[in-house]
Length: 68
Image (cartoon, rainbow, N blue to C red):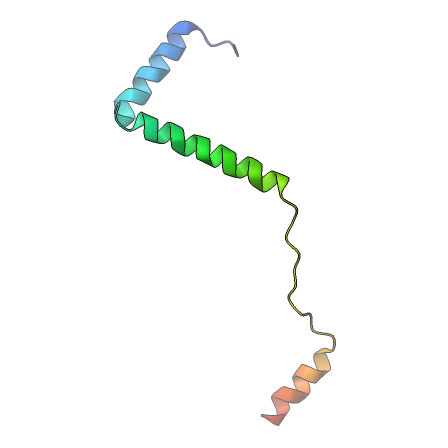
């Protein structure tokens, strides 16, 4: 398992418990799970279509600015 033994995993878990406390670990787990779920959902969705009107002629803007 990536060159990590049982002792290293146990030490890692103990450090996590000491840093965050046993009460926050379920919240962290659900937060990470929700983030992964949202990321997968975003990857499956097609890109949004840009419906912003584009300027066809920049000279029209220059003329309208001069009139004001």
